[in-house]
View 1 (cartoon, helix red, strand yellow):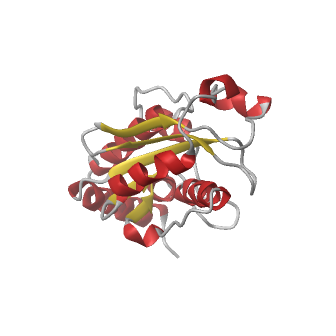
View 2 (cartoon, one colour):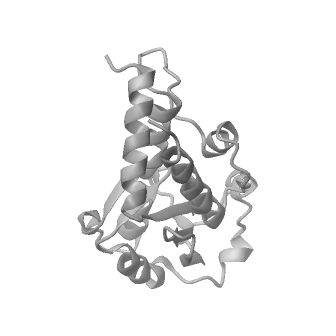
Amino acid sequence: MVTSIQARRTAILKAQEYLRLQPLYLDTETTGLGPLDEIVEICVVDHNGTVLVDTLVRSTRPIPADVIRVHNITNQMVKDAPTWPEVWPTVLSVLSGRLVGIYNAEFDLKMMQQSNRVHRLLMDSSQWDRFCLMKLYAAYYGQVGYRGEFRWQRLEDAARQCRIDLLNTHRAKDDTLLARALLEHMASQTP
């Protein structure tokens, strides 16, 4: 069994390796968490924090009030935004051939697939490499759950635990910049 100390050391070394590869960072905001939900905002920043994509997206379904309370993106805000078929080619072009860090990669990839499915677009995610910052941070932080796995931390908790002074507003741009700062923090530690 891997100890917390071994996992932290491995996570630091992996963070250093990822950072050397100058990854992109991606985040989405959505209409919800379910199998029919879609992206309403997407942001991609590069390793320097330069914004490559940052746009609201007009979904085919309304954003429920309980979701609006989380990310503060309203139906009014997205009513004149580009649609996913208008945004997707740019996103795909930016990501193609790159390494992409995503905090909770499984969720964001699922939402990209769902948004593509709604519009009958293809998504071949083998066109870019990705890694999950949430899983990497879980190993770095080392809090063991009752089944012996490393517990995932919310992004805002990870920022607080690392004393990263960036706000978590649950907006895509802020979350990408926070994920970038988190990887830099992990990579700056001594293994």
